[in-house]
Image (cartoon, rainbow, N blue to C red):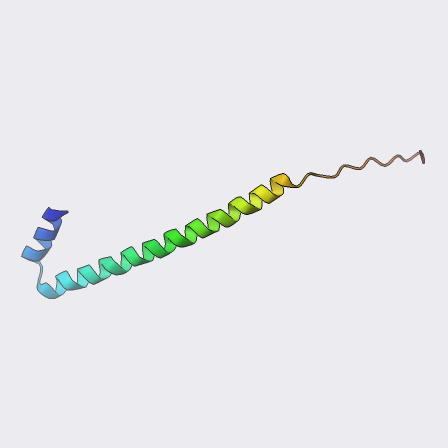
Length: 67
């Protein structure tokens, strides 16, 4: 990462380095937001699956001969 930073600072104009830093920060923020949303959705899915597994099916056998 140090080499990349050095290359950026050496060969790009200062405005481009600043713009790159801002874009990188925004992208990292978006990734953190999406990871948090993903954790929340996975927790919801796990809860729904757990609830469905816990629900036992009701089996009824009806006799047609009246008995």
